[in-house]
Image (cartoon, rainbow, N blue to C red; front, side, top):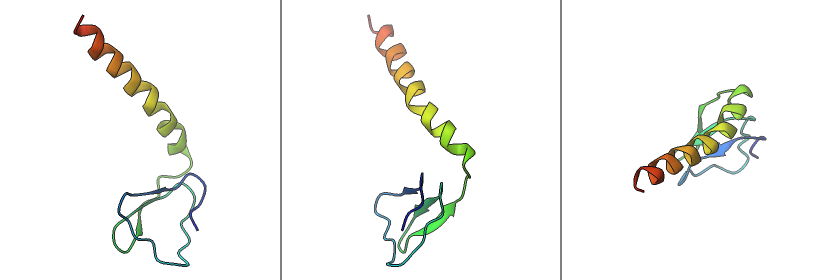
Length: 64
């Protein structure tokens, strides 16, 4: 069971019965918690998409 806000990395194999704490990053085979950044990181993660949209727009504007 993955806790709220957790991320399971692409290709990770999480064994049955594994309990993933909230806001954790799980990677590998077998899947293991590699980072427990805590609840504060969720706010940062929500800000990243907006930054990248801005970066993309800036890049596109340079081509005009």
